[in-house]
Image (cartoon, rainbow, N blue to C red; front, top):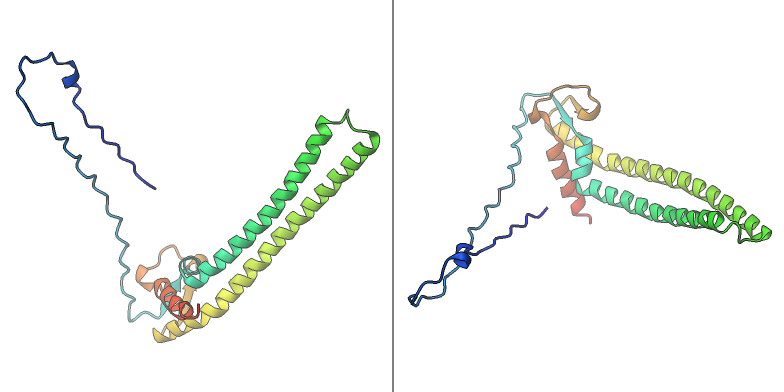
Length: 205
């Protein structure tokens, strides 16, 4: 988001004041530059407390790991690309169907009986084709999502297990379905997990 500041320099009184007889010679007035507008500094990221050494439990926010890690972002881009492709195909079918329906409504009196029957068949075919394509697109997106999540879990879980063993943890919760109403922020392993996932998979790109 951009902030556009417009500065207008001028002296309105100079336009209405009466003329002065024999004015002294003066250098052209120098218009002072408006002071630079201070840009507010971005809020500092909250500092996470250190992980308690004595703790035997930890938690992760896998949704944030997907959103922040290189591996998760790559999967999200793949999902979005397929979504845009399928959306374009559906939009094309919807346009064809709408055009056919418009012709049927506006040219009903101009079409022969045979032409009207053929147009009705086209509308029926396009309607069924669009319905099928919508169901197929939804199924294709769901399949890709499951595949991406499965691949993500397959690659990330060993890294998480290694991190848990390194910290001598007995259990690691996923905060999304743990049911906890409060968790000490220092127990959050997500930032460290993102770093380790990125370190491993950025090198493989």
